[in-house]
Image 1: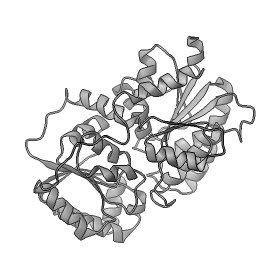
Image 2: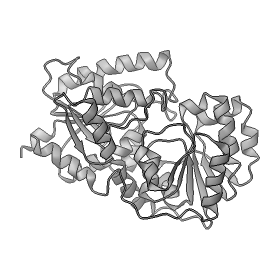
Image 3: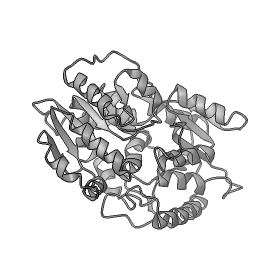
Length: 377
């Protein structure tokens, strides 16, 4: 194979979560001494994390990186709207300059959607590259939950040529939606499966297990934060926990808890330890060794299946629907009493974890993705 050809792989990444999920692809390319172009939109500061995860620093950074965790706190406002419009055209301009063979983006963030649009045939009618969406086909059934991720992922699928579906259901979603198109739909699983294992193995060398069982708490969804009634229910659900809780608290979550007068209630929960945000390596170690999870997140549902940890989901809907069939992912719809019963059963060891095949893939799936792309040249 022409090694020069593979230097034409461009990977567009905006957030730390995207970078974490692309790590297995980047490491596989580096392992084979195949160059790639790493484009950061600047939505998050990715340089430090790149160094920690042993991939190269971004070749291009398209906007000033924030000092804090993110530019936008997941909010859609005038600043984010104009930033996204500008980013679309910056991506288009750069891609026309470097002329890649593939443009790869992952997931459902603002940056993912910008990459899909900026590299699309609508803006580049004579383009010769292929747009590749990793983590394709996820659907919650509502554009408002999760918001704006559900919109972003549909934009990514719409403007992509190659769609790597993460499961049987997502493959079906894509084939039904695009049945008359020329899009390639390939079921592979989600690269976050490889990311979790790679990073957990590194974390085991650095961190020690807690002596007692604990629940790991992770809450930051926009549709929850902006709804006072939902946040009241979430705090009531957390009060149902009896064992130790570890809660790395997002700054935007803290802001809304304080706004609604709920932070004092949280502070009075003696069993819950509020901590600063953890880096992914420490967080994945905590996840891998916890008794169970309480979360409103997305990818963490898949990570809970990797480590076979019960996951109480504080949402009305989920795009990771197949995880609900595992017997350890529980969609509570923010029903306080129902969530309390599940928490009680988990803490009293009444919920047995059965053997199951992870619907989102097994170790090594990222290698298959790289093989597929290289073989298509």
